[in-house]
Image (tube, rainbow, N blue to C red; front, side, top):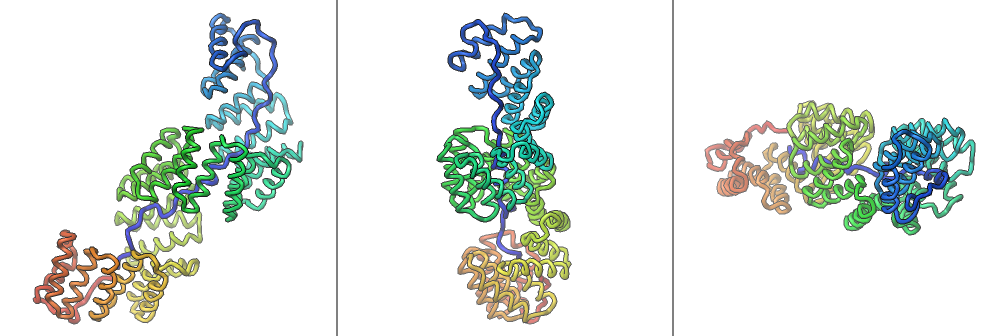
Amino acid sequence: MVPGPVRMAAILAATLMGGSARALDGGPAPEPQAAEIATAGCGRGDWAAQVAACSLLLLDRPSDANVETADLHRRRAMALLKLGQLAEAVTDLGEALKGASTSDLYWWRAHTLRRLGRTDEAIRDYTEALRLTPNQPALLSNRCGAQADGLHLDRALEDCNAALTLMPSYADALGNRCFVLFRQGRVAQARRDCDTAIGLVPADPAILSIRAAVLNQMGEKEAALADIDEALRIDPRRADSHVLRAGLLFDRHDAAGVLAAVDAALRLDPRNKEAFLWRANVLNNTGAPDRGIAACDAAIAIDPSYALAYFNRAVGHAVRGERDRALADLDTSLRLDPTYAPAYLNRGIAHRGRGEPAAAIADFDAYLRRQPDGVLALYDRSLAKRDLKDWSGALADVNRALALDPGIALAYQVRAGLYEHFRDGARAEADFARALQLATDATVRAVTLYNRALMWRRRNESVRAIGDFNDALTLRPHWAEALFERSIAYGQKGDVARARADLDRALGLKPDLRDHPRFARARGLADGTLSGIDVPDPEL
């Protein structure tokens, strides 16, 4: 029995809402005021001119570290930050710290390192700033945000709690604690913190964006979209808010809206890796996997250790039928992030598609250890167990899947086939009937009819088998396998002419059916050299 229509290996799209929201960075302390340097340009004029003037002055400075040289590096770093040249700014801030080891300079460098995604280095600099100026709520809140970026969630929570102990009404710290609790899955507590923070600063777009992610996780989709729209009304230049909006619109199946939000994000931040992933999700789901793979390639070029990019590129390869490439990307994704459950599910599906049911079961087991009520994994594991002729195990899995979700049409037809194996014909017929009641998709309905036709044919009920094959072929007129199997049913009925016509047409559509295990039987029935009565059919 065929398991159902061909499915791409990514039944699940990657859920990025948790990664698209950002912990807050309240910004460094105000620029430190240093003694004026009696030169024109360094610290005055447009940013490019300031960089040029500071660079000229630094050429004339001695190489040894001192306060004045440090101040020139600091001034040039500020101008470089305004120009978006973050890596160069980090270098200047490092030079400034050699001559003036101040909390403010560590804060600025931490802030810049965080923008570059160099999270662990940012945490070290925040820690150094706190060593020099302890018990600063803003520094604690920012280190909380950096710890959250690095998924050090327990340490992040400690920092946010410490900041709020010092300043209970500190909105940024409440917003960051909301984010940390959200990432820990404690969404009700996260919601309370975000609500409190927004009560303190109603027009803060960063906190509104975090609350949008929380509301989305709670299933309050419209409220989440309202928050993100308000955040973008206040500050339309927040690339991460556009990315969050893309995720919300993806859930509404608004492909055009997702792509527009992604384009807006990438105009503001051409290196926003999550924006590329939302683009890939849409393209993979709308039949453009080549472009989806290209979007993932762009995300990987930005961050070669970005596990979700390899996961989503595997989706594109699966849509194109490239199982080996899909498996390679899923292997990489899991090496980079062994905790990401959907990658185990998709890799299991890919292994089963390659005829490797034991490897598939191992991956489905890994998924179910993380998501015990994963209906799709239970359904697919039942298919893999059936491939290995573990009939009881397959039945147990499909029963559990249907107990969790009684609306899966394909699961009923799989269970019907298992009941057939156990010679429980009444239950098999009931499950096929239920599958057809639920099957609104034409492909699923055609497959259900096809599988029920095989059941009738195995029982030598050729007329009923032909009726179901006819209905399946009405839905999928060029289905070579259905024509091939109907030819056998016609042969069993003794209608040699129709058997021969179906077989010839099936071979015309798919010549390699000559290698089918039942080809000799089909040819004998079509030629009238075999009788179809009481011929055993070994298939499930």
